[in-house]
Amino acid sequence: MRFVPFVMIIAAVVAGLTTPAWAITNGSVDGAGHPEVGALLASEVHDDGTWAECTGTLISPTVFLTAAHCGSKRQTTARITFSAHYKSGDAVYTGRYVPDPRFKTKEDLHDMAVVVFDKPIQGIVPAKLPTEGLLDQMKVNGGLEAGRFTPVGYGSLNPKLHRHGKPTFIYDDTRHVTSISFNKLSRYWLDLSLDTAKADGSTCFGDSGGPNFLGGTDSHLLVATTISGDDDACKSTNFDYRLDTASAREFLGKFVTLP
Image (tube, rainbow, N blue to C red; front, top):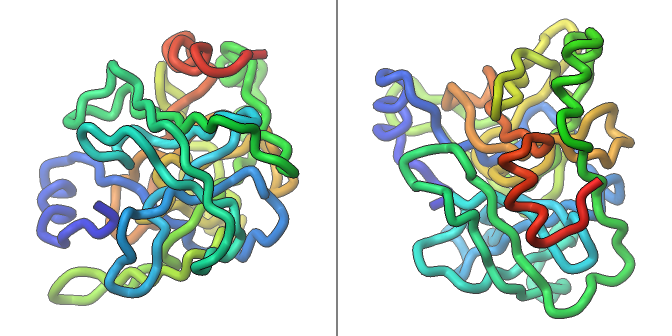
């Protein structure tokens, strides 16, 4: 499910629909910056020799948060790596895969899933989750418009678009980081867009389920997860699922203690 046929992308754009977002563009190698961010590995190696399928974040010593659309129907387990540059032989953790039961494949709402490990992940500090209504309060106080957000993820870098045929996406199983600016806040969604004056980056094919941290690149406050974007060039608006809403907290609260 990592590679989306070009005809499907074009059809979605023409219809005014969104396409799954899966990779960091105009970013840099994260290295040890966000060790709590990991990759959900495919069951089989991809044709290009890479393994990363989606991105996610450790939100407690035993719980990893990602997107429900990253999984397949009737999937019960998932394999996760926290390696900054994954290669065969690196540590992999297998856990129980649990999607939000309210998620429907034809809708973006409730697009959350967790991977629950039997034993705590050692040596990694989990990301922090937001208090309820944090982004709403920031909007009221006028703090969102100038806010900075930090997406992190594995996947393709700067897709190459061709005049005819599908775009080329290059993957390297490496965790990358970038910065992006605020666009709009709605009931369930945090929309983030590139500001060229600020040298913003974006998310694209490879980052689904990955974090958007509130603040600069040293932030670990996870306020929204990457779900989709409105262009196949990965240079426009990103649609990210808010984690500070009562709806999101209803699911998350079954697995972690919320602030």
